[in-house]
Length: 129
Image (cartoon, rainbow, N blue to C red; front, side, top):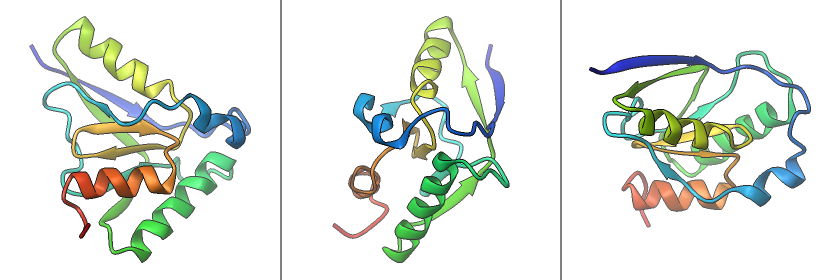
């Protein structure tokens, strides 16, 4: 049975220093089947009104992607479909990366660089190469 697990993005001030945040990233993670909540667009998770460094970085990513004509939107919550304990573990692993979290066609990454987002968007056919 499919369950939707809503997640509201929280504003955590200064939890992850930006210099250290990208060091642990392992690239975009494929989410379990059925988890493509924002098809054909880059979705950046930013809590509304959040002044944290992570939120500011997310907004700068959004502006840079718009300048490159890559479809992008800011989101404040996301729901996941889970079918098994493995699905939960997979989503939790990706969600434990520092924010902002970026979603592209069923894939997710925490605190990606602009180059990583552009490369994934190109791989997904969202922009000219």
